[in-house]
Amino acid sequence: MSLDLFPVVPVTDFAAATAWYERLFGAEFTFRAHDTEVVWELAEHRYVAVHEAPEHAGHTHVTVFVDDLDMLVEGISARGIEPALRETYGNGVRKLTYRDPDGNEIGYGGAPVADATGTP
Image 1: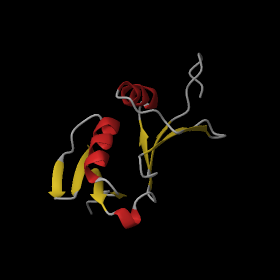
Image 2: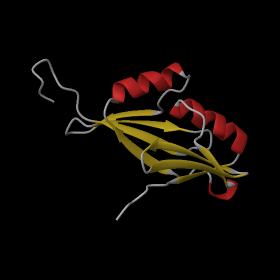
Image 3: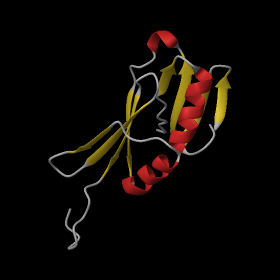
């Protein structure tokens, strides 16, 4: 069975949110679903959509686990967005959370950083 992941982030100001997510994801949206919804393909079968729905804005929490968290965060910072929260869990897993203007949270997680011996 094939499976696609497709969370939808509700926002109040569609144009401003689209610009913010283009900076966060580092690319223009992949396709326009309709007049008030655009979609980014983050990886094969893994999408994030932004949809104008003011009554629901600010309640989304999505986390994406990536291979190279440091490189991703550098790219996002270079585009002018900084994480609102940085966490390291007891097992060494790291998570950085970004908040859009509505308060929706997009988190990025990464494996523990290895020390000089290669041990996380």
